[in-house]
Image (cartoon, rainbow, N blue to C red; front, side, top):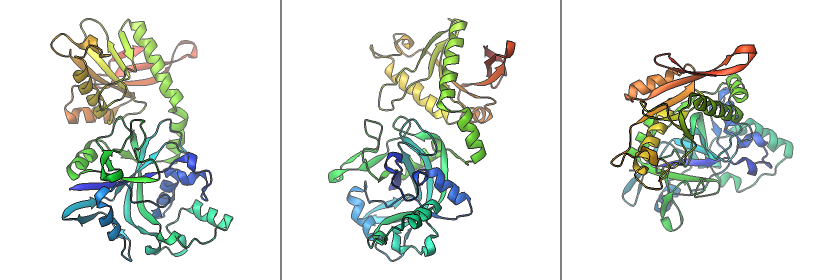
Length: 384
């Protein structure tokens, strides 16, 4: 059975004229709205039935009822069963409240219902974002007769993903384009192949289940912690950690390369490939600013991609080819101390990966430095 999940686009460059201000283009505003004892909210603006292909008319007919269509919902389309999921995603190419450098899906939502705006009992705008209500009143927006016909979705929960979904770490998410032809959700440029407003993407129920079980981790958002994280873990900090590691690897005399592109359909770039000495195996290091168990899936995917690519003469990883097969690659996740969640996940999956942790320290003459430890043995690996 095909399962369709809605992807709503909140693109900040298009939001400057929003009645709800720039914050109305940020999922964080909707998250805070729901957290402030508001049980449900219309998520974003109106949506279109895009990406459904031959199933479009069946979904459209189901939305003609006088009441909103409650989700999760199974529908019959020409004798075929399909499912409209109560899980939705939010794609952004920017965020007015949280700086993001790349396009991706940063939030997941729990959707209660979908339908024309007029089919909801929305007395006094109880489902409308507070900032939008302020804007509508301030600008004295005239009533649009067609506004009640617009399709809207009602959300009850938002979840911030630990790691954004993008072209490089998503499964084969599919949409139907023109002439009902199936194509990937992500285009070659890393942005949605259906460009405007929203899309309904699909996989089979089994594929979605595997995806949910392994890929979509989320966390509660605490505003105080968020501000602290923005100060400490901006991309300046990420670059700083990488630069310090380069220097420390070189000081040890290790063979090192970094940011090598992964070929093939999965794509992406490794963080570090190192070899400490002739006795050690090659080590592929994935660096995360936080304690991040999701890195295990990413690291495994990179190692598998390298093993497929290494036999090619033009491979960036040709040094790992021994003439018959790929040399042994040891996976390493380097994350923020103490790395407890990552260690638990490695043990749970029974992966032979090392977990290293980093922490900032005060050195001689009040100089700041960094230490790297093995999270399991507590052994000191590097110290600046």
